Amino acid sequence: MTMLHQDANPAPDADGANPVLRTDFQKSVAAYWNNNPNDDRVNTKLGEVDGLFHHHYGVGEPDWSVIEGPEDTRQERLVKELHRLETAQADMLLDHLGDIGPGDRLMDGGSGRGGTSFMANQRFGCHVDGVTISEYQAGFANDQARERGVTDKVNFHFKNMLDTGFDAGSMRAIWTNETTMYVDLFELFAEFSRLLQPGGRYVVITGCSNDVTGGRSASVSWIDAHYGCNIHPRSEYFKALAANNLVPITVTDLTPATIPYWELRTHSELATGVEKPFLTSYKEGSFQYLMIAADKV
Ligand code: GPP
Ligand code: MG
Image (cartoon, rainbow, N blue to C red; front, top):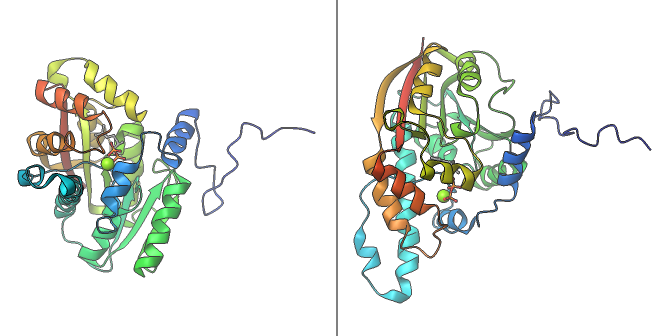
């Protein structure tokens, strides 16, 4: 018996186009998110608060009283407060998408289990296409879309955001919420530039290493190892945006706004250990939490 396809990725995307997973690295990222090894309890417990499942961090001032009240319900209060800060982060991202109407189509690059996509649809009534290279995540989010009765507007696709196959100029806005550290930024922004309408908006929230403090710090390498990603330097974002006709309109350093989230997370029994390198790198300045909104020209 021949084993011609032994190492090939047999799964086509929904349109029957090229395989979604092109490289061994992409396969390893997909495997990670299909079977999250870092104990996905933290994201699942927070998602169960109100059914919005996030895979990103939080911003804003915590209500510190949650760690002072009765001990038997402290962990429950922490979960709710961490979730509130993560939802506030997604709300802030959506604040930067510009004027979006119900007829507009938006894309979520690396849509995870759908949290930000559902929030966008709730806020704007718009169409949202989420793309993810994890079949598990796409399935989970599509189940949620069915439960929410929004499948006419919100759909998740097992697709590679580097090569979506969607029509050129079909998207009014695109965002990536902490997913760009898995891909080459020049390839990614070339695809986003192709997909965006003229004047369309791209918003990214990301962690990036700080060019000013020099090379990758030990804590940034620790974060990379924890998630299996490759954090880019800050400069790389602006080079890749400029190379693809994406012109920044706002740049926000969210580092001070996210440090309290990480401090609060150290008090949770759901802490994963990654809190330490985040706090160390943010405080020493080797790592930054950045939001960039850019227009396609
Ligand atoms: C958080 O996901 C985001 C990533 C793993 C991408 C890396 C982001 C950086 C800013 C470096 P998550 O919510 O699944 O992580 P956790 O399980 O730690 O909450
Ligand atoms: Mg999380």
